[in-house]
Image (cartoon, rainbow over all chains, first blue to last red; front, side, top):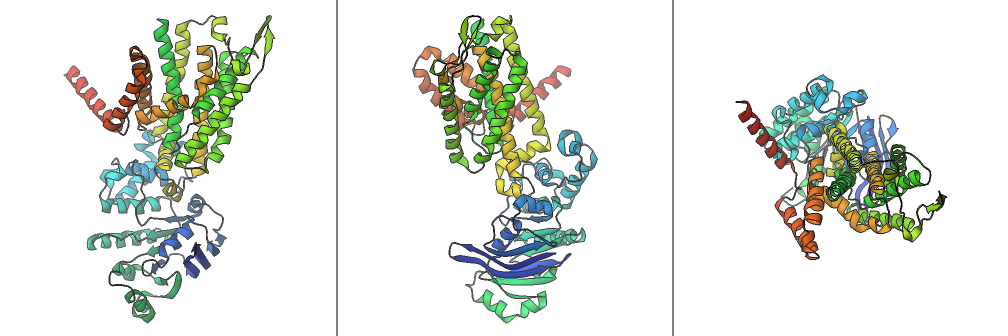
Length: 250
Length: 303
């Protein structure tokens, strides 16, 4: 589904990502882990189109993503969440989902009205379902900035899913979550996979990554140092070195 | 009476000007170009009625179209500059327009008299309303019919998904792109819509004031245009209307007796208001408060 070939990104002299090769199959939950600064977030930014690559290619379902703007990539079926939550703070929860909702199937009239179709119709039903899914059913009219941290994270995930992507890139979705929230996140990611999405999960929280992914790639200093199934990665010596070679706090 | 009608006309025209800046402010574009579009609308409509003998409504229509087209063209380079640089760029555009009309001459002889824009001398004798027997009340009504229509259209659009999309771009452009919003289309569309409304305001202004002078279209007007939605807040269109009434009615006219000290108080009052109500005079809290008060009054009446 997604093929990354020899992808490189330089920021001035810094090689954030260097000749990276990845292949993700449809329906997989693919993990990307690595110490801080290993290029994981840069990878997400490259795939979602926030930065242009310095070199290399990204192919999604056979098509190159190279010259597509971020919004064009969303239309092609690639969505992402942000590590440091970028909701629309002045909009309500409902509106946050509404602007993201991929309305290619709608008629113009359905896409247009908030008030009229709020009471009925496919738009309302879909957004209500998404609110249900995120446990935010009673918070539809709340401003996004007024939500608790955990709720904001759930909304961030739902909003990305609202664009009905084929491929969903999650950038450290479990950061700052307690055990219960991580278990809840695990459940919701599985539900999204059941709905037909392929997921790339960038994470530090190992219990989530090890428990949910089919394959994991490990990055260090912008390159891939290992790839394989969770059990194999756990035992991998160079992976252990990469993590333990850092100071205690990673 | 005419004095008050003039004030009401000015408030109406400035409300339209403020609304044109409001739409752009929603998308996060702080524009000082609205006075420029205002000028283009004014001169275009005046030329159409005075020199080409058009009726007022078609003249306003074409003026809006031409101004909109110009705004559309401005919208693209405007994408390349952010924040304060956009302020500077639009300011430059406004001055360019003003200097253009400072030099613009198109004189024709009608019934033995020379009419038309005369460069530095300005464009006087825009006598459409007088020549066609419009009363002062009819002029005021025309202006305010447009004001109410534009306010209603913007308010309605704000209830739709398009309104939410515009605001999303204003809140976080990067995130907006990431959820599939074409930021380019949104920002250029907003610039075009803002231009059309400013063109409308200018067309009405030209015929109401009957003479155009380049001094009317300076940075000061552009600053007023953007001050209205900032002071009024971007929650809703009423904020802009209230801000115009506050600035034009209270400060400009009401404080005339203070002479030149007026400017000092003017600035001070604006600073005070911005501190007390940083989200604008008419933010969502105020609206909620008003709704509650109305509900209370209604329930008391009914019981």
